[in-house]
Image (cartoon, rainbow, N blue to C red; front, side):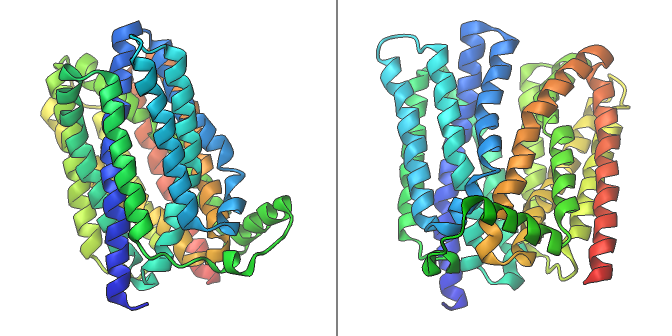
Length: 402
């Protein structure tokens, strides 16, 4: 397969993913607003977050073996179909009036199960259609599509939620899933070698092999650092509106503006990432990005209540550094792990990061209540800088032994 075809397949695949991600982001916001309008209960909102992340986190420890032993293209298609069918349940339930909260929770859980299979599959097929030397560039492209989705989804969701019922927005997400499935079907994705050879190893033996491969490549510490980062960092997105509305005493419009600024910063970082030719060990760039994100949050935590403009600038910095963390962290695994083990490694890494999200949200909720959201930003920023230093030490260790 030549380079031109590989580029074409990448863009076909990720165009569909970008559309699906946009409609899913719109739906996610609409569901949260629906739950707030119907219950106004923080516990219900927290439960929705747990249902959206916990199944994906738990399954991530196990599904990697199936990803490596199966046709990843077919698995992505089946996952998208399951997610779309689960969402259609909300559409059907809405025909009878108000949608029961328990149905929404079940749908969120099923969507999370589908994502547990889909996300590591997508990450594992990327090295099959992109030359290893260009993984950084294409990570920049995928992060660009993601940041555009983050910019558009708040405004579209706000506009649609005022004129549409939730079930109509769900139907829009189903259309996005259909487009993604069509693009996966059209894209030419080679089968991974493990599928072609029909390996029949025992399930737990293969799981163990994935961990052994991580140890051989000295990436266990790298993966655990990612889990710690997730526990500290992910709750920040829940607390961001509280900083704008509570600490700076601004309006909902300002809260939305801050989210858009973050997405614009992310877009700029993604464009730069796609243009840079990063030839050194990618772990050092992950370390630098992590420290930069920590600096942004630390300074956000020491701003006065009158320094909202400074908060906006620091938010842009946080967004700018994000693609270098998110995009390059996956590339470290893609470059160092043989493709036949990649599904196991990526699903395990993703599981640790995803399962850290509800843990972090629970901890942050209690801490922010006790010490204040501004102080939590300060402490989180320091914690993330410490994780960045850990990444730097891992870089020095892996460089020494490679």
